[in-house]
Length: 206
Ligand code: TMP
Image (cartoon, rainbow, N blue to C red; front, top):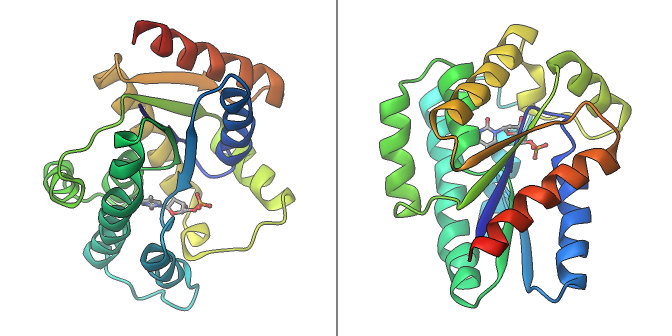
């Protein structure tokens, strides 16, 4: 089973994934967690290039191809083998980030992004995608308060992040069977309870 976590910056994805993986392992599931961009030795080098604040001149198309290159390596090296070995794979971001940030955020054509993504991933889609949805400004202040290192994607305007959020919500509306939208502006435990419920419903169906 392949589960992805999406959401604007500061939505608490990594905290929720850590709690969920602990919970699922306690229940006896084999769990593998990963993140994008990165998650492999090669992907981590691409991540450095993508996040370097001095790479301000990066063309939007180059940006997409680098995110996609990192994703291609992750799918090939980690995600497909883990799914085949019976793991539940939890990924902090996946292809919907490209649609939200490079598509809705930067304005690149969604059809082009879809084709690039299918090429990069061999068509691997998540079984379930959790959208941790929250007010953009709230997310950014939470991220700043967390003391995380600034990266190139932190240099965007508020309008960019608003388009990203709206883009995510539109993607979720378009594929309601795959997406579960969780209100992430609540305490960590309340969000985690919703996340677990969504996953347990899917596990029972299997
Ligand atoms: P994070 O690791 O802190 O989530 O940072 C990753 C940043 O990269 C975040 O701002 C979202 C951005 N991103 C894209 O713009 N497109 C993508 O395809 C992915 C995976 C991430």
